[in-house]
Amino acid sequence: MQVKRYEVASMSEAMTKIKNDLGPDAVILSARKIGSGRKEAFEVMAARDENIQVPHKTPIGKADASEVRDLNPHEDVFAFFRAELKEIRESIKNLHEQNSLNSELAEMKETMNSFFDILGMRKGKAPQDLNRKVYLHLLGNGFSQSSSCRIVEAMNQAASWPAQSSEADALKLAEKHIIGSLPALPETGAETRIKMFIGPTGVGKTTTLAKLAARYSIMKKMNVGLITTDNYRIAAAEQLETYAKIMGLRMEKASTRETFEKALRVLADKDIILVDTPGRARPDDGYLNKIEETISDQRIEKNLLINATGSEDHLDNIVTGYSRFRIDHLIVTKIDESRRFGRLYDVLSSTKKPVTYLTCGQNVPQDIEEVTPARMADLMLRCAAH
Ligand SMILES: Nc1nc2c(ncn2[C@@H]2O[C@H](COP(=O)(O)OP(=O)(O)OP(=O)(O)O)[C@@H](O)[C@H]2O)c(=O)[nH]1
Ligand SMILES: [Mg+2]
Image (cartoon, rainbow, N blue to C red; front, side):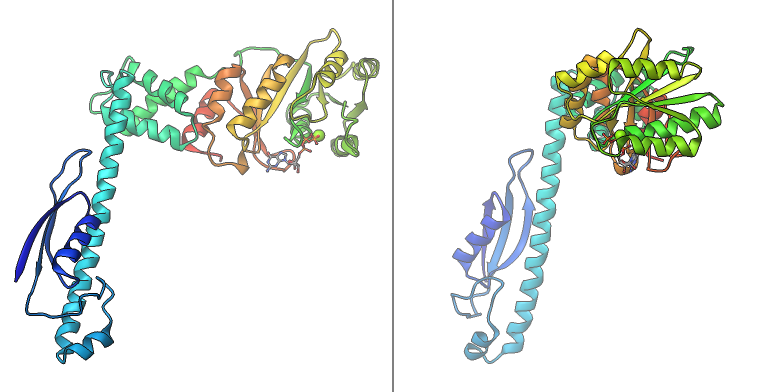
């Protein structure tokens, strides 16, 4: 029996060398990892029984039974060896895959440790692997890399860091920071009488307005009036009119400053007036001015609706496009159609406007929920669209 030792960078390199040196029927006696860190190396011991003669060209793992039968009458012995060899090769392959997975994971951990080192977080209060776990949790929930870094950094600065902290403790601190950094509605603020709903096409303005109209009129027993300024889309006014009829509410149509002010006079006795607008992905100046024109000297609360399923780019575009509008509140729609909400964090941090409602379905009036920063943080951290 001929035995050889190999030091190789990968198992596939070992297999090639063994095959060339000892032939296709060589047997691997042992394989172990001898490198460490990024430089991976293996020591492989292989052997070949010189008494066994097999055709030299038969590739490893693909011995042809008919060729062997012609050359050797003891085919059951060969069959046994072939089966053994196949099993050993399978085990080596699995071992190799496991090894490379482990070393990839080790490398990722190493990279992330140096990443946190660069950010100076290693010296923070959080144990290193909790930094990593919270960071990955945030990324996994759709938070951007920069938001995740900021949150982990803030978590490290937390005044009271529990001893023997678990991942759950770390996440609680991260959540506390998120809640604190989200804009909230003032505790006691009088309800603004005229509320306008703006946002891109199909985001859910008319449906949300109908849900809120029901909340104000049925639940809060307020006297509600509706105005639609949507004359762009055929049947847009009819859509709101249908809701108005069902709820027994008065609805006015307006398309100019004069008709809008006339509608406000007609609805002068109403406690709350909800104003629907046509959708625009990115309002051009003409459209903006037209809407601004309709705003008389009465204070009008502007609610920008954003779609929870929107990509980071899309949300960014909407918020930038509508920023001229001096938005008061955000309403996040269609949370039932999304599973990860972390990307909303950047939008909320940059607009600094509170989210007042989440909408979670097409049913009027029930699929709407009033929200606080705590609920938003819960949604973003736990994907909890319940
Ligand atoms: N899944 C889901 N669908 C919703 C939600 N809100 C509204 N929709 C649906 O989204 C579609 C568009 O809703 P609309 O209320 O007409 O949207 P809009 O913003 O008024 O649309 P335009 O006036 O054309 O700009 C409708 O099919 C609604 O039923 C929600 O929270 N979840
Ligand atoms: Mg509409």
